[in-house]
Image (cartoon, one colour):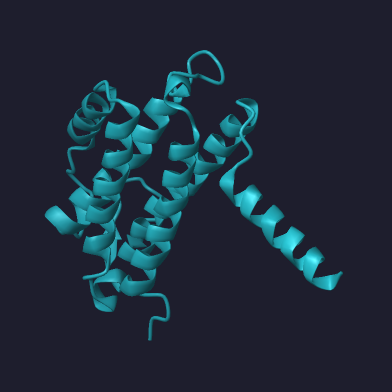
Length: 181
């Protein structure tokens, strides 16, 4: 029995995306061109990357339902993703992209079966391990977003913004302290 199935994947992914959206909303539009260092993604590019990062897993599992990655045209997919990621977008357009693409992924997630999540997908020749479960591959989308969200929280600090999760924790501590006194 799988205790963490499609419903839980969708719920946890929606929570991660909600927090990414909060960060995207907190950062002013005039800071979306900010790059923390040369040759790094700007805030806008990073948020767009986050919005589109599920595309590989969606193509493999939802569109093609592949049992193997042998012969998968990864360079073509990456080229399309990179081209889409380079399109200039306003803050509002990026927020809408995050919402829309996030819900597309979460909506698909909540409809898959536990059996589907348990299936093994063969990796390309020479890969180690030789196969991964769909669950492991699909979960990587959330992990990838959380990795980049950590980067965004550091960027917020550099810009003088206290991240929303920190503000919420501070409010809980203040409320608990007030209740004790």
